[in-house]
Amino acid sequence: MNESGRLYAADMEIRISSHGIYLLQYHIVWVTKYRRRILKPFVVEYLRKVLPNQIRSMPSVTIEQMGFDDDHMHMLMIIPPRYLLSELICQLKAQSASHMRKAFKWLSIKVYWKENVIWWPSNFLSSVGLDEVMILR
Image 1 (tube, rainbow, N blue to C red):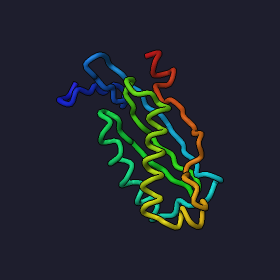
Image 2 (tube, one colour):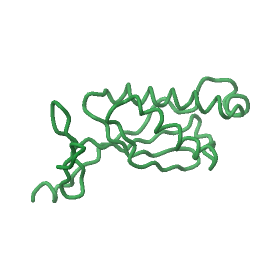
Image 3 (cartoon, rainbow, N blue to C red):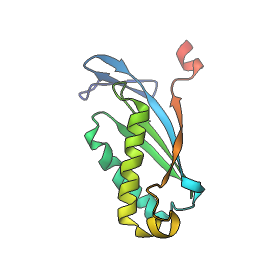
């Protein structure tokens, strides 16, 4: 264990909280509404700055990796068990959409016709963990 309260086992980081030990990594995909190809390089750069700032108010939530295509975004996140995933994701989507609409007025005017949206309401969520070979050791 190191000073930050983290264990490392087989290249996987195990987190220690006051009430338990966990390793909860999630692969999350958000798709833009109507699959609009709005995630241009300058928008991606903006999201890479905004999303980490948003999770500062959520202790122990981290974004490990982010990947983008023109119409969707992938994130690998570590989320402690105290958070409800659906609520956390909805909050992040709403806040990021609000920031994007303020920063890029063309999204509200030309792309989404003054709708209060950017992300599709649903998302893809998958847990990431140790594979069976690692577990059997």
